[in-house]
Image 1 (tube, protein in one colour):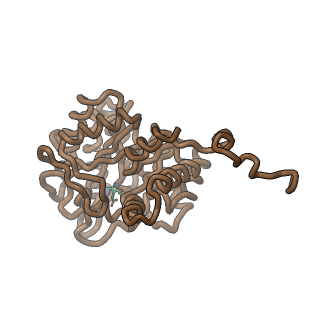
Image 2 (cartoon, protein in one colour):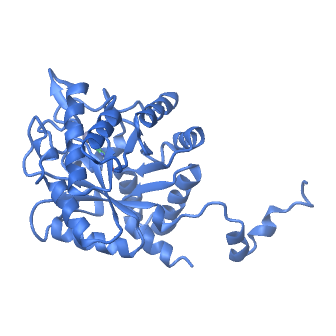
Image 3 (tube, helix red, strand yellow):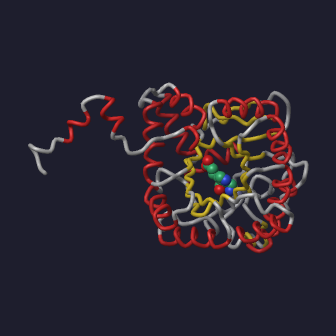
Length: 326
Ligand code: PBG
Ligand code: ZN
């Protein structure tokens, strides 16, 4: 029915009508807040390229987690800054490694908050790569053993979900097998399934102190130009036992998020990465954009594309904004 019979503006007349026909709703329980955990007491060190985001020592991390749990956020994801880095990424799987300590503290001091552990080696290796380096190359199969060990250490500490972000081939199967062998059949895997080699991770590497000391990550992370390959990556991870699949970054990958949700119907997460946060925050601090409206609009767009879950440095802020929306 064309104009003048059909007038789409009829349903835009006031907020009550607009709300009535709204197709996508963003909920606090969709959001995951990332944290960077470091040693020390009372540490709250702001990341230069991410104003409002900090490296936190365990005491401050617990306070933060209690706050976000109160706000209705379902989960946090943890990244660790170890005491020392070495070739074998030892602290990643040490039972007293920074992340294992953080998980135990959080499990003891929160109620239903899900504690997700990022599972990778780059924060713990002296060279900053996500795997074991041999002759200047990241060796896939040697890395799998260390990832599997790390998954078990994280699960033993009490992690509710482990989230491998390394992009080695076969790692979901290796991690699933190791978890099962150690009695953690019920620990879900949220795999960074389609993770691009993106320039948008720049600020994260300052935050996690994980910049590769030579070369880059393009021999293991995906070419951002590829979508069929992204779907193959997701299919493989599902076959290997992933329970939740993730696409990363988010705002440059809305088509991939859509295709992943449509093709597999799996719980789908999108990671709105550090560079996405920094770009919005910088423009907001300059007074060039309205931070709250821009953030809620972008998060709603990511959800509309097909994401069930959104990992975002804006989770806590968005939770507060959503509470005052109606
Ligand atoms: C570790 C990891 C990275 C991110 C999540 N897990 C960095 C990287 O791969 O270089 C990026 C997150 C962000 O930019 O917010 N493998
Ligand atoms: Zn990594």
